[in-house]
Length: 361
Image (cartoon, rainbow, N blue to C red; front, side, top):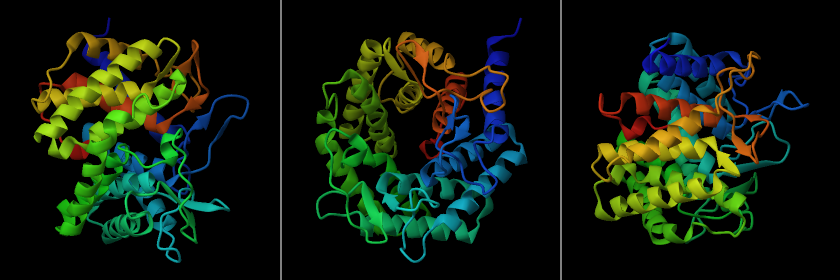
């Protein structure tokens, strides 16, 4: 019989193999938003955001396993992002191959962090230069005088109308995760403007986060909003020692965990479980909130139930996006896989090593 450590190592290896062998990363280096496992049996379109997440995930896998094939795949994905940058528009399109293009504020921050993660390994000038251009585009093109517009059209850069019921179509505290891109640019370039941009987003996020949940009446939509609420807590990690940030983290953990318990039996997202666990572990490490061992163990068990053991290489080792009314939704998701794999690795290594927030996917 395998030990728990051997089982966990197998889980981590299979998730990494899924990234390399499932076809979710296409020949161009770009990564699809997800794989449709139903009658469509195909990838969704390539996305710069998901490719950015994949770069960070592949670098993380390289550091865990010391296998250069992960770093090679991360480099290929980063090259895709460099090539996706639209020089004519001075913007990063959401889908580089789309006919009608848009630029997403949140996605830009994720691509910055992905590019910087692989830049730290290669010191490739193109990776850093593109990250800087994307960071400047975020600040220039999305600012509306008060907030940062989630979506602008390309090439016109017109801001799409806000839709309060749809969290991704309205400004909100979740954008603090994307602002980590600015924070990391400040760390790398030493340009104070990026720190000031992060602080501006921090101020707005702290002022509004308590009204973000539940935000809507539909409980399935509330489950969807737990995902961006966790983004907010992730965005607080660089300033975890500040009292207001610590208080918001404690509040957020309890709030998200409560909705997971109440809504989860009918609709549960794997990425929410992973995000909640990662925040729990960081909060415990930083002395913000002690780890609730019982709750965390339950969330770990639920998370493991989302990993596919299907023999189909397009599925094997990946993590499903969500379960609704007892059935898995037909989306094999690269972000869910990255988040869950990292969360389970952190769970296994907690107390044995210190985790850096910069490594958070």
